[in-house]
Image (cartoon, rainbow, N blue to C red):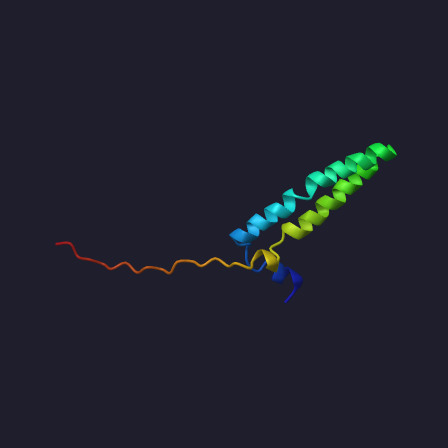
Length: 89
């Protein structure tokens, strides 16, 4: 079993989707602020882009694949209900 099989085995559940959204939304604004401040202090836009870019890549690695911690609450699907056939006369 490869790493890709483990990651892509099943989709993230609802709790995992909420957690992934938090993982995406929380670190990006502070990284933008820190990157802007470092860029202003040093006078190099490359530092701003590097700080934000590295944070963005780390966030993508942490939240986009369906890691096992995003699948810890599996969905319970309803069972199939058999329809009874009735004859209308």
